Amino acid sequence: MTILAVSISAANVEEAQEQIDRSVCQGAEAVELRLDFLKSPDEAAAAFLVKFVKEKDLPVIATCRHISESGAADWPTEKRLKVLTAAMEAGADFIDWEFAQYLQPAVQEMLTAALRRFQACRLILSAHDFHGPFEDLSARYEAMRTLCPGAVVKLVYTARHINDCFEAMDLLYQEKEDLIVFAMGSAGMMTRILAKKLGGFLTFTCPEEETAAAPGQIPIGKMKTLYRWDALNQQTKLYGIIGNPVGHSLSPAVYNGCFETQSRNALHLPLEIGGEQAEFNLFLESVLQRPWLDFRGFGVTLPHKSSALEFVHQEGGYLEPMAERIGAANTIKIGHNGQLSAYNTDCAGALDALTQTLGIEKKQLRNQEAAVIGAGGAARAVIVGLIDVGCRVTVYNRTLKKAQDLAEEFGCRAAPLEEIRNSRARIFVNCTSLGMIPNVDSTPVPAEVFGPDSIAFDTVYVPLETRFLREAKAAGARVVSGAEMFIRQAVVQYRHLTGVEPDSERIRQIVLDCLNPAGRAR
Image (tube, helix red, strand yellow):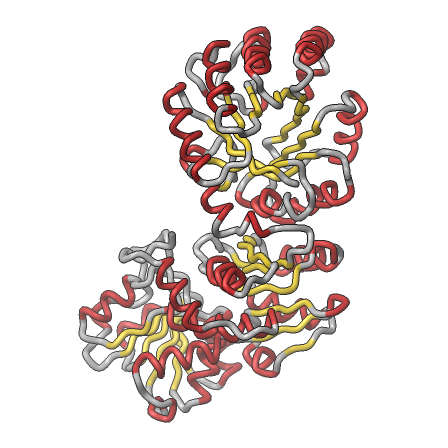
């Protein structure tokens, strides 16, 4: 059973006690005391904190990290050993010591002698690379296991890209000994979460984001609720949202909330994939080569919707006619034996959001002038939908060539973005990421363009009310938020990916609950 350990990185004993209490209330399964973060780590402080945690019937990991492996201060080896020995004497269940330091004969001798005295305490032998993946992860593991067979081996490296994660997950899946292995940084996040599915010995969280002891640690509250820690096991089916950026996405909250409601053994993850087609392809290929991960499908957002369609086409998968016509997919399903299917739920979601929010029928959009800002996958879906109901569409984009290519493909007009000041459109649709958190002060359309007869529709949904919508509303225009489009397309996407009908009102409730009055995702 994988242990969920909370790392406590407080500067003093009182602060550490507060962090421990908060973590216990949120369901911590063990506590790691990062004693190197104390302004003055000494034997008395170590012993006190170990006993404080043990009184709560939780396992304790005592760590006083060497500065070469991201320790908080340059404490002498002798001092670190004394502090950890005091922790062992007080009842610590584990101590964490660096492999590189353990290789020094004198250090190994002292540490081994201390562990013999306190046989109830077990060694976690750790190695870290803060620059990138280890040159040979498996070889490093074998060397550490051979040197100290009784230890829990811990291997931690920095993921520069999400594609760096697979080596860690491979090792965790293949080895049956007690093993801790994961990747640091935002790109490595899924390795921390999936440690439980893959049988890792433990994974680390933090009390809150601001108290993270290492890059990419996830707050325990988020791990337990959003990422369904208590429900995870080896049979958990995986889904995800692919994009760059993707941290703002509400898809994990929506899907995991629906999984909880329907008692489904499934988990939805945010999957940030940097780069373009090659990096996207490598990620999907890596997933398909590892059926034991049990990924069943993905939502796809900016900037990978065209890449998604191309990948499924290259793999000989099914292309929904609408997705093929749009030239972009926002949904990839992985079926039996890795058979792929690509869909586009944006087009229907956008039109339904526009008409239902405004209380009009689609035929009432016929012959209306529409300005679509952007030339990516979302724009393609919106353009097709508007053309199909008879709108006269002009595509505006910073790069005119992209707008012209898109306009030629779909039989509409193109113009550079600066000309939108002169637009005579009634409907304005923002299909760019301008205005999305954290760039909330951006907007593609000057406020003076809007009038009382205008309709402003933003495909951005975080924040709920963008500057684009706020300025349109101030001018008397009618507005449609991106949340409305997101909710409607999510219902269809969930059905495609899971084969189960979701509760649309539950999805709406989750989306609106996740957006506070300022429009920031919780």
